[in-house]
Length: 348
Image (cartoon, rainbow, N blue to C red):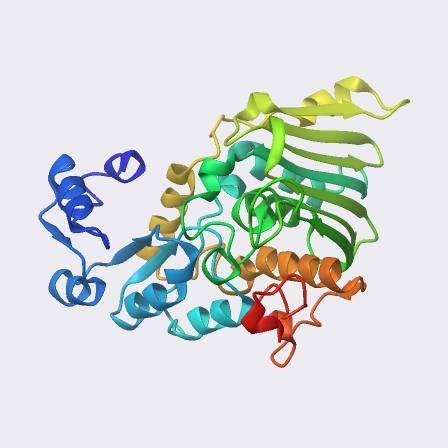
């Protein structure tokens, strides 16, 4: 809510919908909202909002996003976008040619540190990217997975790559561009989950750069880490759930003038990664009537890579970008109906 309230009076929150009637009522009372409901369709008819923010469990994203789009509202949907590529494609097919649109909450792209690094990499000023490491090593205990929808393919979609690491993966793709192929492994090592609790992967990018990707729910010392080694410097980001400019470091390669790297390493302003930063961009796009970042194919990239990661991990195959299409079992579920991983009814 603070991100929304910061935009008053140009932006007004008018209502809340929750499956729990008391939660909806309490939330509306806390923020003096005029409307609360347990029925999204009724709320859409009554309130006719310009923007609907979806923060429900992933299993509800497709249905709620499509309902809001069909009611004429733009949608800002929390990650993960959907349970599968099939669901995501159904969501984007409900968009209009000129809107409404449904971007995904990928706020880590919108901090000044990421915007600066992206422009610098694209300029070639520090040479081509060669090696990368994308790490989301967090800790989630048994109580976290006791929430009924977590750790299940049918309601969360997949394990920590989907629910935890997707932000860093999206940022990696934002900085490095298209990927070409992936190999991976997954494990159920310590949590009582239907999905995995850790994945590791190796990714080759279209540029030729190679990256490792690690997603864990088992790591007591938590960190979100992104490292990109270019020809002339290393760019690193270390944080947990959000960053400022001070969380980015630039290290020159031997023989490269440190002053040259230092001159390039500091953005003009310090905008932390936050929902507020992405919301400002989204509201500007709404006013201009243009497609926002992190929507359609741009919002699909991280889900496609994660889907390919699971296909590679559960089948042992190398997976190429673009190969998971309708008819592929991984297109409709990230377990791909693989015995030992899929729920019993899916694996028969």
